[in-house]
Image (cartoon, rainbow, N blue to C red; front, side):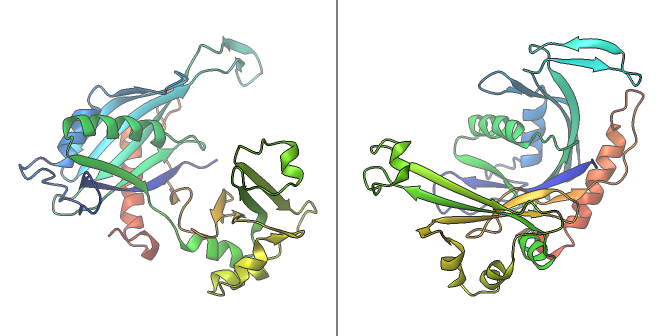
Length: 309
């Protein structure tokens, strides 16, 4: 699996509704820059999930101009396994208490005069770190600046669904029906869910025959602006569903599930990293991670779907 980078936007706003984002170089009217604040927060940073199973900690923090580069070591416990060498010989035994620690790079680009910055997060073999790291950053930022709110949000790729549908790469349709508590009709759901509880019914439709895909006509009509097509999409076997999610295979062979009502939502935009140099232990070097993330951010800024506002 290739090494990729997930893309996010970075903003700072006053707490409460309707607040406009502040300049990244002066978030509090006193000259405090978000780059310097995040560099301070990341110095000695360590965050553990509520159940204690996941951990993330900063190994390197390097501010430079409008950029802030950090390497995060992260891992998860709970897995028992044999660690074997190339010949199949057992090198060591991993117990559920052990934690596999992997290093990933993060690059913030935070121009002082801008109100929206960007973040590229290294995703190693499908293992991302954004959730746990952002949880810690937002909490610590809020403690230092109670009147402000740090937001790190995925950079969506609204054209990805259109392109996948046009290329006939739909592999799944998921329909979701929400049945409110106390208002559900007496049907088969009542056999499983108490009448006082809200129920969620999901139907997954996929094609098992190799080489065939889900028919795309209705979805193409809806994406082209024919809103009436949605009623046909969510109608199945005499039932009307509330939501429709489309599972597609992207050109890089990764999979995404799009909510038709919000095709811009879902997983963040990702881009493949240039080839990374490895150290003696087989992990990417800091220098190649930094250069790769810089390349991704430079390229994303030139794409229409990735324009930061």
